[in-house]
Amino acid sequence: MTQAEPRRRDVLRVATGVAGAVGVVGAVAAAAFMVSRLDQTDADTAGPIEPDAVDVDLTPLQPGQQVMVFWRSWPILVIRRTPQALATLQAPPLLAQLSDPESKALQQPPYAGNWRRSVRPEIAVLVGVCTHMGCLPQFYPQPSAREPEPDWIGGYFCPCHGSKYDLAGRVFKDVPAPYNLPVPPHRFVDDRTIRIGENPPGVKFDFGSILQI
Image 1 (cartoon, helix red, strand yellow):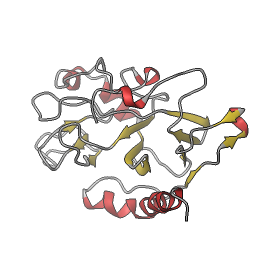
Image 2: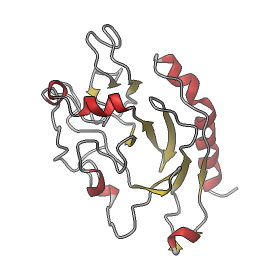
Image 3: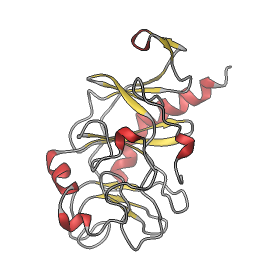
């Protein structure tokens, strides 16, 4: 058995079980999806690729849904945001509640240093680890008058100590978490496939350079 084999099984187990896990926290049910680890070379890169990169097929992922995979043992959240959610990300009432709305802290690659913290507006890729003490924030994408707290506007809620993030992974003010959720290296291989763990051509970004995970 190679070292990569147990990691691959872990990824596939998350792929088949994530819908139930998301349902427990009252979020939109996650879609079935395909994820695979990659060989050492790939035709579309014209050279070697990152050995631990993970490809995710986005085709089954519907607006408002997320899936979770593992990259380097980190839980990675891939979300397809709705147009309504994207509009909310720029709303002044939300921005006034955020600690770092312009993502000035180095918690993302340069190509995700924008208001949506993503390459494509609708697709967000976040490391699902609260920057306070490492818990897994839960996905509550829809506004709610009661859950997980009163006047919820949609995003992520950490069940351990109450830290909150919006659907771009930006942290709220006055919560224990000090930074936005990290964004891992990633790029689009084609219109339906995202590769986690590899930067776009011509871009150098070391995930180890972020402030905190």
